[in-house]
Image 1 (cartoon, rainbow, N blue to C red):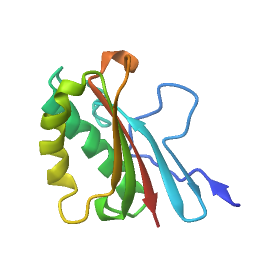
Image 2 (image 1 turned 60 degrees about the horizontal axis):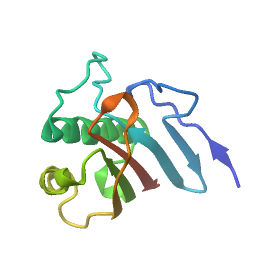
Image 3 (image 1 turned 90 degrees about the vertical axis):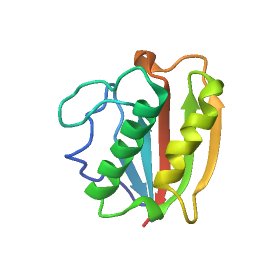
Image 4 (image 1 turned 120 degrees about the horizontal axis):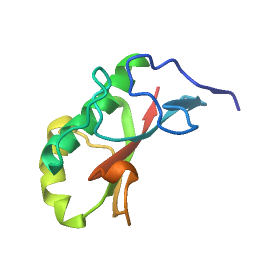
Length: 126
């Protein structure tokens, strides 16, 4: 198995000792993204719709850095601070993954880093 850490200069910088993305055997694993604007470092408002958009945009930034797109995403995992946000997240999510959405798991987490409302990780096929 060959493992590499692709360059992701446009992405939000990690808040702990991990890579934004790791590639192995044609799969790219994007670490959980939270609602921080990678260009300004500002946090999105404490609103599930705004945070969901920011998180999915952040995934898009990483995808762009590795020359791929949303259509290449094969699996996502969504972590919610409150499962009651499930419907609102689905509405936003559907605008990013409309035709053939990836496999997905959604869970309510006990708490998310920084008090964020949502975190999403993704697996992408090259």
